[in-house]
Image (cartoon, rainbow, N blue to C red):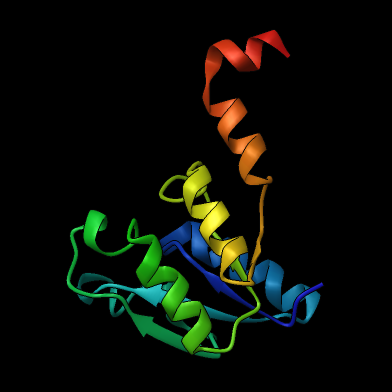
Length: 122
């Protein structure tokens, strides 16, 4: 188990992950953009890291920025929520390479299941 997780998503998804973290006694850090600065997912977090003005491609989808935020805030894991980076095998591999835990499937699994023909063959 990990001690501190960065929630790499926003709004309701991030709130649900945060609620689970609290129930498990896990500290959590959130990321947000300028537009999300007053979003409810920020409340209760150990830290909140501003990842820029947006749009999503330059903020919530910027894997390097998300990993840097996790490392800088002392996290040992990243929870991608759903959407955004949760289906990105390259991001999951980069999280592993950074010495962090990706809360989700292994990069290889994401890659296989993202390819419908390969997934059906399984």
